[in-house]
Structure formats: C-alpha cells, structure tokens
Image (tube, rainbow, N blue to C red; front, side):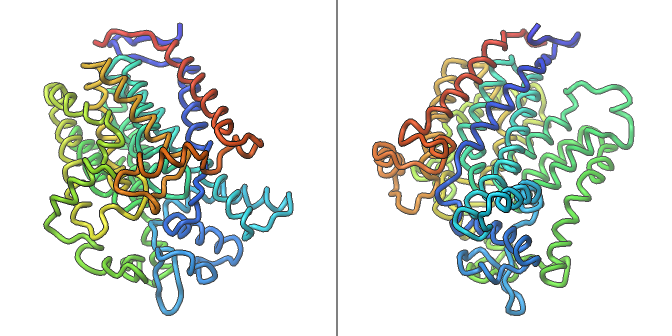
Amino acid sequence: MTEGATNSGKFIPCCRVLIMVFTTLFVACSYTQQKEFKSSIPVSRLDLLHALFVHQTVQIDTYHENTPDKAVFKGKYYCDKAPGTVLLALPSFALAVGLLKVVGTPLDSDSGWLISSWIACAGSLALVTALGSLAMFIWLCQWVQPRYAYLTTLALCLGAAPLPYSTLLMSHALTVGLLAISLWAGDCRVARTSADRSDLINAKDMLAGCCCGLALASEFSAGIAVGGVLLHFVVQQYRRAFSLMLGMLPALTLVPAYNWVCFGSPFVFAYHHQAVFTQMHQGFFGINWPPDAEKAFGLIFGLRQGLFCWSPVLLLAFVGYSQLVRNSKELFLVTYLVPILQVAAISAYFLPEAGNTFGPRLLSPILPLMALPTALGIASFPRIGAILAGVSILLTTFATVIDISLRSAGQNPLLDFYVPSFLQQKFSYNLGSVLGLPGYWSLLPLVLVVGAGIWFTWRNLSPVPKA
C-alpha cells in the first residue's frame, strides 16, 4: 500500500511519498543561489551574520555601506530586519564558517560570502520551505484527492514566492513555510484524539503557535496573516489560546530582545531608526492610509510583479471559495479576508513593490491561506488546474534560475529580460555550474532530480475518494 484512508475517509500519505515530496522540493529550493545574493536587501542579514562571527557584535559598522537597509543609533549601524530569519540561519551559517576554515577560505572573501550565504539559505530557508510544503500537502489531503493536493503544493512552492525567495537570505519563503506548518498543526480536521481536543496544553497547538511566532519574528509584514490564522484557531475553541500563546512566546521574545540589545529598549524597533528610507518614520512604519487602488492593481495584475500574472494558478482560488464557504465559513472568512487586508495594507505602503525583485514578495504571507481554495478550485477543474499550475511553475522556475532581481528589466520582465537572458545562457549560481556544467547543461541535474521526484510521487498517489 502506498497510501490509505482512515475510517473517516481522510487520506494518509505513506512515508516514502512524504520523503519524496520533501526531498524533491528541498533540492529545487536549494539548487540555485542568486547572483544578487549580496544585493541591498538580503545582504543586510548577511552583514549581521558576518558581524556576529567575525567581530562578535550585532553592529554592522564594518559592512553597512553595502546596504541601505540599516538602522543608525548613536552613530552605530544595525540590520533593520526582523531578527527571526538570522536566528534560524545561524546553525547552517555556523556550519559554513567551519567548512570555510577547513578549506582555508576567509569568511569575508568573495567566495566566503557566496558559500556561507548558499549554505545558510539551504539550511534554513530551503529546509523550512520544504517542510512547510510537506505540511501543506498533508493538510490539503484532508480536503481534496491526494493528486490535487500534490499539484497545489507544487504550484504554490515552485510556482510562487517560496522557490525564488529560498535562494537568497530573505524572509518570504520562510514565512510561507512557517504559516503552512501552522495551518497543518492547528487544523482540527487533522486527526486528533479526544484528549487533544480538551487538554489545556496541546503539543500541536504549541507547534502552530511557535510557527506563527517565528513567522512574525522573521517578517513583520506577516502580521495580518498570523493574526488571521490565530483568530481562526481560537474561534474553533477558545481553550486553544493558552497553548498557542505558550508556543508563540519564545519566538516573540526574540524581537524585543533584539531591540533592547541594539537600541536600549524592547519597544524601539530598528525601523524607528531607519537610516536611508526615512519614509518608514511616517504613518505606521511607512503605511499611510487610505490604500492606493492603482498600486493594488499592480500588485495583483501588473505585468512586472503582479501575483496572478506570475502565479496564474491562484486564480482558481476564486472557484474554491464558493465551495469553502459551504464547508467551513470560518476558514472561508480567514482565507478570503486576510488576502484582501494584506493587499490593502501593502498598497498603502510607501514602497509596495518592495524594490526591484521578482513578484509581489510582500504578499507572500497570503499564499498558505490561498492554498486551500486553490486546491478546491483545481479539484473542480483539474485540467485547467494542471495547465495553470504548469505555467506558474515554468514562469517562476524560469525567473529563479536566471535572476530574481529586476533592476535591468522593463515593464514586461518576461520578454524584456528573462527570455533574452535565457537565450544568452545568463544564469544565477547553481549546483550544476559548481559541478562544471556549462550553460543549459547546468540546469540538467535540477530537471532530472525534480522531474523524477514528481513522477515517482504522482505514480504513488492514486485517486482516493473523499468522505
């Protein structure tokens, strides 16, 4: 048996399928390291990691000139990012530091920066993204047939923000993975014993809370999504609030602790002292109401960074919503209203495109919430779903292996930038090139491994009727 169903009709994937799902997505998310890995946004976190290991300080004075994403306080410079991403990257970055010492490569050399960034990303972002995608797959199997759940998981991992933002030290893939784990752990449809439902302290709820806390401590723009998920859990049963808060507490203390170390107060954020983007000092850290309708349209439908332009599979969520409202009004409300609020908030931000990067990355937190209605939409129109999922994966993978920086792209990055770059074989760093494979050949291991993983998993996911 490769899979089965419980007496309640809920699908349970077998271990080898789960291992293959995780392995396939982990390889895809760790295969590439962006050529712009030291661009202004991710390098702020890298500056902090280098400062911690080279100078044993949280001050990034030695490196601050390479990024505008910094805070200045009493003449000293600090990384202005939420600290969770750096904390999660610390173990793998420390491993990279050790390996560099063994081979005699200085950490602050060009090769040292690249290798340490790559290993740090693989050991944190790619790992959490793959685990989150695995959790998403298991969660969706409680709602739709396993092949539809798998297709949705592939589309949202490889056809949206998680894949590209696993390949440089940014927080957005991490946030998606953590929220996906939280939704799986906290969903009452996932098998729970009667004791699980009544105990004041519950391990799964603590895990859900921990992941929500880490998501918020890694990316402040995830606040709306985190709040929506937690509210949904508490509405299901108010007693869950204690376990959820108990799980969140360690992660949430990380933010005031970092603030205290850097700025002498737990209530003073790095954004209060942003050195370059002083617009952050206005409104609510750069958010000024009312939302801008034109900017909102660009975030959703724009050719340059529009969500549905680069991940068209998400359009099927609107089909799924009509089914979800009949099955679970609470889940419908959270999965429908949170994306609307997120778009409204980001369109009111002074820089909604968040720099010249691929896709609307500040909308990333809504992806786990849109997974369920998208899966229901795919289940309703599987052929259309397969086509849109394939297009989403192709577009996103195409961008990831080339360059997710759009500084030299026009208003139509696909035709103005990506197609010419592909024809000229201008790719980001990848494991194939490390092995000495040139040009197109460097992508062959990625295609073979991921393709084989998808084929194996699909073959072992026979349709299972849903109860």
